[in-house]
Image (spheres, rainbow, N blue to C red):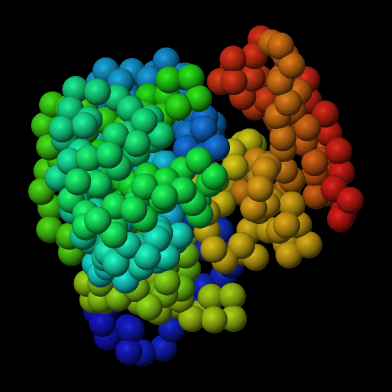
Length: 408
């Protein structure tokens, strides 16, 4: 049926229904119980950049989220895992879903992998090495270096670079140990290792242990979990990743999926081709996009979104690429800043402003910049949300300041 539909007329869908459908898929229609936290985190993973975002993103979706509970799930229960994932960013997801967010993200070709870790190609060209060759060389040394240890990236990069240099030709060694261009004090080889660690994360060899101070140390997955990740065929993992993406961000396109993963649009065929039979076209926002056929009924009758949320920067919901569906163009630069992005204020399904925290001692000041005048009732609900944010940020008191955007 999906294939027949794909060859026929695209179904018409309304932007309001798409927004409500996505909010529900992102678990933002209502809060879920604490025992559903892993299911919520597994929808499409939860980015933890800037550090601590995962707490706020999960609190927006789940009752009774605390730092202690997350620490237990990651450090003791080991049912929640953190590693580098889409776009080279740190993500949390259920350990049982690890193949989806590792093998499923790993591009099928070396060219596409270079697109995922932009910046290393020039160094590899100078060394006369391919990416796969570099990653394989580092993979062969990492167990010796990291077994039984937790090392931050600088320490790990330095030790791995020292071991890999013995595998190189004299000419390569000289370049490997030379400084720059990635920093005055960082040898070229260490920079290459830093880039390639992302590939080792997606191979399921390393992951991130809980932060220690301002560092997130690497560990061997097998050491951390006491077992390797289950083996899943790459095509199967990629198909599952695309299903999750389309369930959360559909209707969507190859271009938007590529941007979400962190590759180029020409790289996504290994994901997309495997799911062709399950997709239908829809006419959406003046264009043509794709939806899981099984989601069409849910999209046409989504639940009405209610409630107020303070979404962190990098929240899964605001990772969508067709930004105009949720934020007017006049305010998009305020929501999505390349540096120092604020959080987003979500009220009854609409993003109505941004927010920023400022902590002084044990007091958290939260500044909410609204895109339109906010009712007294909404301000009350946002103050209640601010109380929870303060708890998650380790503050004992919170002050909320309301401002109107200059664009209003």
